[in-house]
Length: 98
Image (cartoon, rainbow, N blue to C red; front, side, top):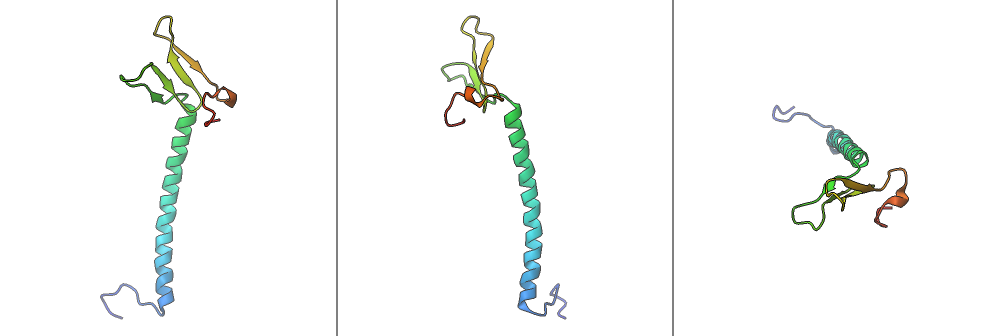
């Protein structure tokens, strides 16, 4: 056995098999990490009623999320008036998100 090579394979197929097994473990770990990140993002989106805020350049002050939107009250300008409920998807403003 040549000391510079790590393994000596009896056939070319066994070399491909070893390479495939090593790569499949790495892909499995990456798949698990991405799945956990995706689950965290989904939980944040559903728990937070609104998560896209306004900017200084926007016309009106308010927040928009997946299932609730809030705008400042016209009367006092301090209170947020929110519309939408998580248990009633009919209250979602956009037809595309229903």
